[in-house]
Image (cartoon, rainbow, N blue to C red):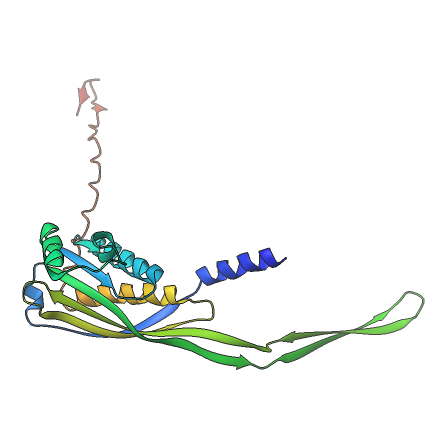
Length: 231
């Protein structure tokens, strides 16, 4: 029974939803920046969150034709690296901009749902005239909901000038079944939406419509009064 409950909890957690309100601003030079290859740094202390954030952003950039690589694939997370090594590795992979993701606040909103009681009564009469009643009482509520929230920040940095090309802050909130993974996915999706809206990332070109096959032309024939065939 406990195993089944555990599976159910995991399944419900995967169904969690989150919404993100994001505010952003682009530098005037951001629209002229060439986003050849971007490195994303998900600066989270939790390794799982870091890999998730970098993977989400990498996938979003790839869907818009922009090369992107996660910092954890270029640098071992547990090893220090010098500035010279950093510059050398960035140049090796033609990285001109770095997108940094940070979380500067997190918690849960706890709400107690008081119990409500519902009673359903029924009466019965048997064939020999006996009567009786029965009642069933059910209860809902009596528990506490835990809805996660988090505050995020994003910065797009020019490697050559160390200039901030784009900055954003966001508030993400989840439902009863959401986790902080759900919040991070929501934030990453809004980061890409805002980068496009602010003109930093160009939207992908529309896919060409598939050519419709041309139908063969048929010539019609008819017989004249003398039996000859005319077209």
